[in-house]
Image (cartoon, rainbow, N blue to C red):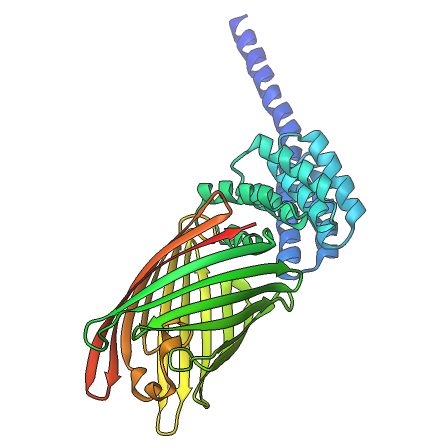
Length: 423
C-alpha cells in the first residue's frame, strides 16, 4: 500500500509540473516574442524614423501581450509622431483608465495635448501625473512649457524653480527660464554704477552711472539708456538705444546706437550689430561688429562668439578683431557662469586679453588708443541674484593690467553695482 501511495503521489506531482509547463510556456513565449517586436519597433521609430512600420510592429507585439503598459504607451507615442492624433488620444485614454497611476502615461498624453495646443487638457493631465510623482522632472518641464505658451508666466516660473531645486543641472529648464524671464514682464527699469581706479595712469578716478528702461513686445526687446560719466573731473552724457529683435525660434539679433555731445569722454557716436543663432545641444553662435567714432575717426571691431550650456554651467568664448593701418588688434574673452537657480541667479568669472569694446569703461577711450591699448590682461567676477522674481541685483569687481603707452603699463581696478525692477 505504501509503494502504491508513493507512486500515486509522484504521478500527481509530475502531472502538476506538466500542467504548469503547458500553462506558462505559451505566456513566456508570447512575452519573448512581444519584447522582440517591441525592440524592432523602437529601431524603426528612432533609427529609421519609419513610424508606420513601427506602429505595425507595436500592434503585433500587443497581440502577444495586450496588458503591457509600456508598449501601449509607446504605441500612443507612435501615433502622435505619425500625426494620427485621434488614434493616439484613444490609445492614451485606454491606458490611463487601465493604469491610472502610470506617470509615463500622463507625460505622453499631456505632451500630445500640448503639441495639439489643447493647453487646458494638457495641464490637467500633467497635474494628475505630478500628483502621483511631484518630483518628475519631465512633467515639471512640460507643465512649465504649457503655462509659458498660455502666457501664465508666474506659474511657469514656479514649476521651473521647483525643477531646478530638484536638479540644478537641467539645461532645458534653465533655457526656458531665461526665455520666460524676458517675456513675462513687459517693462523693466534699471540703474547701475561703476567705479574705476588707476594706480599710475590717471590721478582722478572714473565714475560711470546709467539708468535704462526696457520694453518687451512681440518683436523682442528695446531699451533706452542714459549714461553719465565723470572723467578728469569733467561730466558728460551719452544716449543709447539697444534692441534684441526676435527673427525666428532659431535666430535673434542685437542692435545698438549711441550718441554724445562730448567726444572727449564718450564716442561722438557708436553702433553695433550681432546675429545670434540658438543651435542644438545647448550651443549658441554669434557674429557681428562694433563701431566707435571719435572726432570723425571711426574704429571698427568685428566680433564672433560661441556659447555652450553644460549642466548648470555656461561657457562663452568671444573674439574681437580690430584692424588698423599697421596691425590687427586682437581681444579674447572666456566667460563662465555657474547658475544657482534661474537665469539671473549665478556666479560669473571672466578672463580676457585686450580691450572689450562692449565694456562700459571703453566708451571713455579715444580712437588713437587702439593701436597699443589692445594689449592688456583682465579678470572680472560678478554675483547676480533675483528677489521675489521681479527684482534683480548684482555686484561685480575686476582687475585689468593695461598697456596705456608703448613702454608703460598700469593697473585698473573696477567695482560696480546694479539693480533692475521688472513689471
